[in-house]
Length: 260
Image (tube, rainbow, N blue to C red; front, side):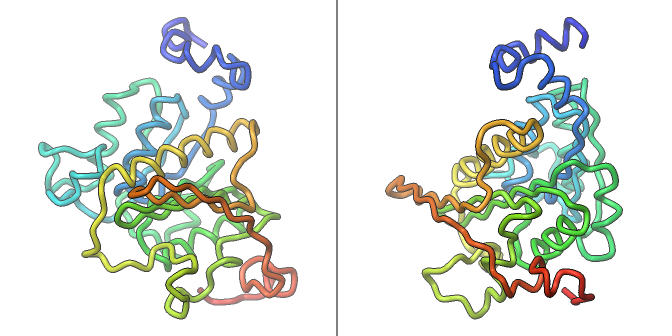
């Protein structure tokens, strides 16, 4: 690793859990940021700053003024631009030593497999249940971990789904039938409010989880769901258990051709 690069990452190389070997491993990592909105824009900034060597940013949308309270990878100068182009430009300015690949595409069953070529991990920056279901099925097919995040208002939640553990669909199968007190990631209507700092809290934890999973350090949020209530700053952790009848990952169903 070049001296200039070592100096850039000196504060994390000093961490015994990372060190020079961990930093070099990060530089070889390839991560899909699935969505360049509130979560994806912030988690991508932290991962770029950490030196993750190749970030693929996938999103189909364009930058709007209402995005700027939370989607901090974008700015007024990029209003109207594709979000992936805006994000790639900013990430390149932050860290010119990494590779950023913008892909302007809607993430769905037809596009997801192509996005995952050579990828080591997925970071969820989506805002709806169907797309997260696509991510979950693809992660299981490709044996990839993915870091889930959900935000609404002042509240957020996060978990890490690793093949062989609880999957996303173990804990949520049909969001329209869930009770208010149960897990409801990605079911909010698009006009619901959100404070930018809410996305910041969850995206920061997503970046932390991504680094931990890429380097196999610490204890990731596998089989756990963390909820953060911003108004009273209450943090709770729930233990998750596999659903033996899960349509995505249970042994009786995972090899069947079940449509999403």
